[in-house]
Length: 459
Image (cartoon, rainbow, N blue to C red):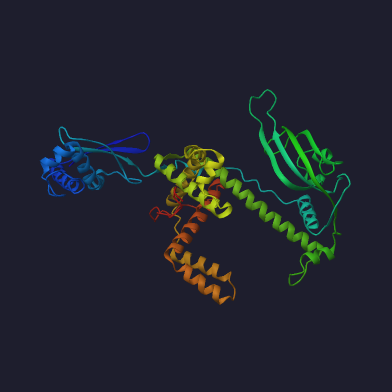
C-alpha cells in the first residue's frame, strides 16, 4: 500500500492510497457475488451466476463501483493509521482510479489546531465601579413600586403614573450616513412608570404626559451623548397608549423595611435594608463587569491566536444549534423546525447562513478555551470533584430523600463527566480574567500540559 498526503487550505488533507491489484480483484468477486443475489439473471438462480455473466449483465463498471465501496472503509482505516494525519471525523471518498494501479482518493477533515501565540501578554483595563447612593435610591424606588397601590385612571397621564403602551422605535441613520435605521425598542403592552430617573430617552416622559388610552403619538428624541449603544443619535418613536394607572407609593421607613423582610428570622430596619440592597447591587455589578471583561479579554486572545479548523467543525456546531432550536420550539410552541421554516418562509440553507457567524465565533471561543485549559494545566482532580459534589449535597439540607437521589445522580459517569467539564470551564474563565488583569499565577513547570475536558466545538 502506497500512501501520499497533501495538506489543503481549508484545514483538510487529500490522501491518495494505491493498493494491490489482487485486493481489488478479490473485492470485485465479492461485489459480483453480492450483485448476483440482488438481480435476476436469465438462466441462473440468484447468487449462482459466474463472474463473466454478471459482468456482461450489469457491466464491469457497476462491479468496480460496488467493489470500491466494499473496501474503501477498510483501506481508509489502514491508510489513516500509517499516514500520520489526525482526523476530526470520518473521511470521504472523492474518486477512484484503476490505471496504472488501483487507488482511492480521500478527503480528510483534520483536528482543529490552536496556537495561542503570546496570549499571556494580553492586558485589558479593569475598571471596577462602586455602587452609589443614586443606584441604591433607584433600587429602593423599585421596591416601593412593588408594594404600591395601583389604580386605573381615566385622567391624562401625569408624572408618576404607570402607563401601558405599545412602542415601536428606530434609531435613525446619522446625518450623511447611508446606513439603514436600527430597531431601538419594540414592545407590546409594556408598562413604564413616568419617572425622570428611569426615562427611556431624554424627553420621553414629556412626550407621553397628557396622553389618554387610545392616543397614538409619533415623535423624535435625541439620546444622550453618554448613551452606551447609540450616543447622540436620534430615535423615531411610534407609541400607542393602552392604559393609565395612578401609583401610590408606601412611605419609605422602618415599617416598610420590616414588611419587605417579614419572612426573615429578624426583619430589617430601613438602614439595614439599604445596606443589603447596596451589597446586592455591588455583587451584581461585579458579576456583570466580570462577564463584560471576560468577553473583552477573550476577544483579544482570540484575535491574536492562530486558529485552524475544517468547515465540518462549524457544520457540526450549526447542526447542534438547529437541534436545540427545534427542541425549544417543541417545548414552548408545540412546533417543529420544519414548521418554523414554513411560517418564516426561509429555507434550511438560509437558516444555516444566519447561524454561521455565531457558530464560527462559538467554535473559535471553544477551541481557545480548550487550548488554554491544556497549556495552563487546569486539571480537575477526583478530590475537586468530590468537594463539588459535597457542596451541592449541602444545598439539600436535611432532606434525606433529595440527598439520596443526588447521590445516585452523582454516581453516574455521565454526570461526573459533566461536572468535571463545568469545573474546568469555570477555572478557564477565572484564569482568562486573571490573565487580562496581569494576575495569572505561574504555570507549573513540572507537569505535562493537561488534556482538559473543556466543551468542544460541538457542545
